[in-house]
Amino acid sequence: MDKEFANWPDDRIFRTFCTYCERLAFFDMLNDAIVIVAATSGAIMFMNERARAMYGYGMSETAALGLDDIAAGTGPGLGRTLTEITAAGSAGLVFSAIRRRKSGELFPVGVSARQMRLHGTEIVAFLERDLTADLATREEVILAGKVQQGMLPPDFANERVAVATVYQPHHHVSGDIYDYKWHAAGAILAGYVADVMGHGVATAIRTAALQVHFRRALETGEPPDGQLAGVNAAAAGCFAADSFAAAVMFAADFDQGVLHYAAAGINHFIVYRDGSYRVEKSPGLFLGITPEEEFTACRLCFRPGDGFVFLSDGLFELLPATDDYPGSFEAMGPWLRQVAARTGRRDDAAALCLMVK
Picture (tube, rainbow, N blue to C red):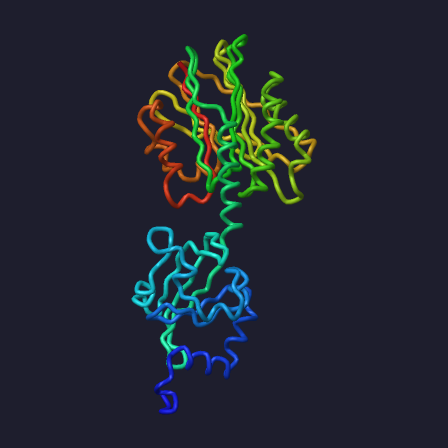
């Protein structure tokens, strides 16, 4: 450093040289909030225009501020100390923190912080983003997910059948749904599993609309192929030009011992009999492709002790070979829930497991 500046305080060196090289003016052009503090004392040496607006301070006020004036403290969820940031070196740290505006209001930020040397001054630069709107949206999505899950039926059992359910969204809301209805007069259990293409809130809204059409179909008592055709025609307005849904519908007649089913894109389900499993396949085009689509009626005889698993592709793709399935079908539901909850899953997962008594 030149002898002329040897006795200058660090903040004077920083401000003088940054003003000269117009680096501070450049920071004012950025859309992210930038706060620069002295690495040892925590004195705020610069806030760009976006940061001043975010915190509510004017240009003349920032010179008297320190990091403690805008930080709500440190600890879990509050932020990191300057010591922790400087210890990280050139790698820096990325974390969430709670900050304080001039008004005293606390708010969350996402922070990328790094120590550096600028014009002979050791500084810590904070790149910050206000997360208030993001967290509000996240809370709404979490609530939507809870409402969505609350609309699904629970496990069910009577003297003829036991039903175990599996539901695991990829995030908080899901494009996978299921439902069933027990028709006591005819000893028939009718139901479906559906998988709407996509993720996120828009998909969840389409899923909710489709759910209404499926529930109406279950009330009709029609065969599954007719129910699917009715849902496909009625739900044409639920799909964008590039979206569709997959589904399988079934009706298990326990007096006749016959499972009637029809597929629309979910072209496989699992059959359990005499201690072994197999994958049953059936044809059928996705919902939402053409409103006039017809679906193939299929049937399969069953007897006490048999089991069926109707499941979405997101869950089916996670399954091992059938030889590695649980030895007892009663364990199938809990086992599938464990499979669906594993890390690394990239899709929603849903299933209905039917055990014939």
